[in-house]
Length: 343
Image 1 (cartoon, rainbow, N blue to C red):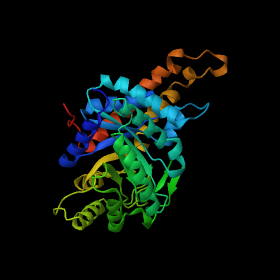
Image 2 (image 1 turned 120 degrees about the horizontal axis):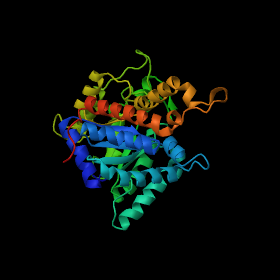
Image 3 (image 1 turned 135 degrees about the vertical axis):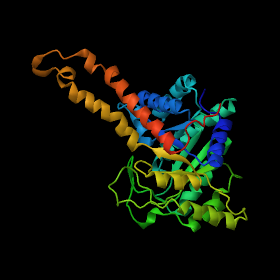
Image 4 (image 1 turned 90 degrees about the vertical axis):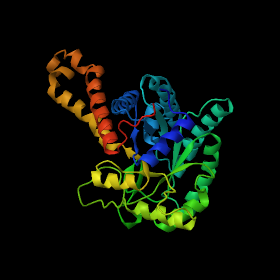
């Protein structure tokens, strides 16, 4: 199937919300990791989300000029072609973009999609993330309003992060402390500024102790039950029925989470869970194993010629793809999206 249309992406999110499952959002940095993600989704018979961070886009732009927009557009165009060969629907997303990179990343990419939509085509990306967690909530939401209006016109869904996620990702870092928990007041202020779908659809990355990366047990205290409190507080404020879930939540810092934490998050409205650290390791681990096992072949040791079959990037690249795709399958199982693809 092709990359998801705006209509299909909305249907994907609606199905996840109603079925209490979520889509793994897999960060990719190359055509090879893209294929690994697509293969994993196809093998799990799950639709999914592929995303590119600012650092990933810079890497994709090449080390000669490190242009983020060039890198993101190039891989997205590539994805639109190769995704046709996989029998699942895939949404393309851009991950964390802080304020100082908006003009060099999200705003130019929005402009690309705006031109495509004006020409009667679908947007290049299906969603973009604005990470204003380092700003005051007032400034964060003010920028989110501007971006949401543009995103809506371009048939794109916006993701917003209103409070910090701990740890570090692509140069954006926050301490692991009590500020990593969104309050009901934060959620109400978000609804007041961005609406509840009437001003455009958005995904909400609320914080419930999330931390990027993987940490030793005891260093991170996740409280996914907090999402229920946020939904209930906003539902009460806006006269929504008891038990309703006004927000489409995103689970950041999902690598290393326990099955119980994930299931609680799913029950409370999470429809997207970011996975990067675990898939990075899954991709790299078999490469390291191959190099160590074939040391004399991948290197021309002591003047020897080595073994081309062992240092050919396709040899170890296939192992990396298979390992990463298996981790994506596992993610689909954990998030209960296995077998839920749109036929």
